[in-house]
Length: 99
Ligand code: FES
Image 1 (cartoon, helix red, strand yellow):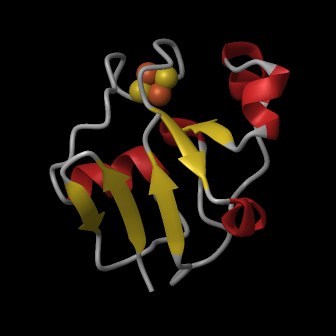
Image 2 (cartoon, helix red, strand yellow):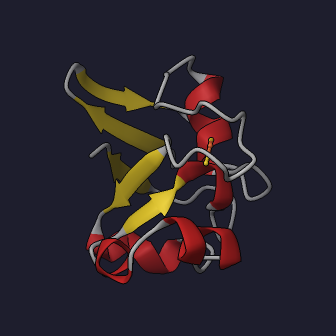
């Protein structure tokens, strides 16, 4: 099971999924730039991702930083900040799109 990032250049598969690693860190495992500008501190909102509906229950709930940085409509549509979002367990299968 792994984290797959769907981008304009194709699907980028991390090959693994780790409970204690946020989704920004997963992208960094494969040297995929998803737009982080603040280094994962929840300040830039440059690392917005969209989770497939079926995958939203496989990750941590939006935290206070995300509720501040994202609109209610974005959250309803599955937008998250990759640096604030963690898989609920090892070996999840997650499909992520970039807005
Ligand atoms: S990397 Fe800046 S908000 Fe996530």
